[in-house]
Amino acid sequence: MVSVDRLLTVQEVAQALGTTVRFPRRLIEERRITFVKVGRHVRIPESAVSAFIAEHTVRPVTVRPAVLRRVA
Image 1: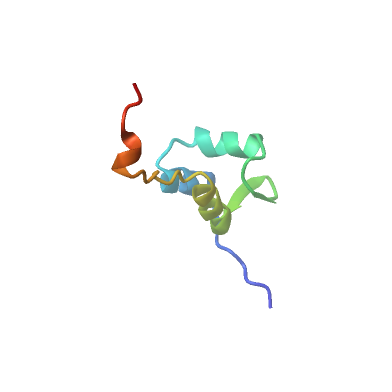
Image 2 (image 1 turned 90 degrees about the vertical axis):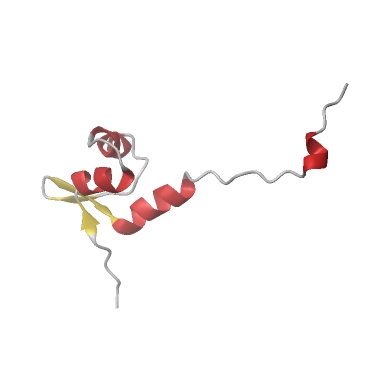
């Protein structure tokens, strides 16, 4: 059996990302996020939003204090 993701509207994606509606629309236009056309409507799977967030998450760099010494 195929598992079906919940399909989100562009407004719901914008709210989840904390942006305006313009940002997810630009992601769709530039084909930077997976989307589904349902007639004339555009929907984005929840898993695509999660994948987008995971892909663009920047992890902090852990550096030992000894490495931070100045050279000179």
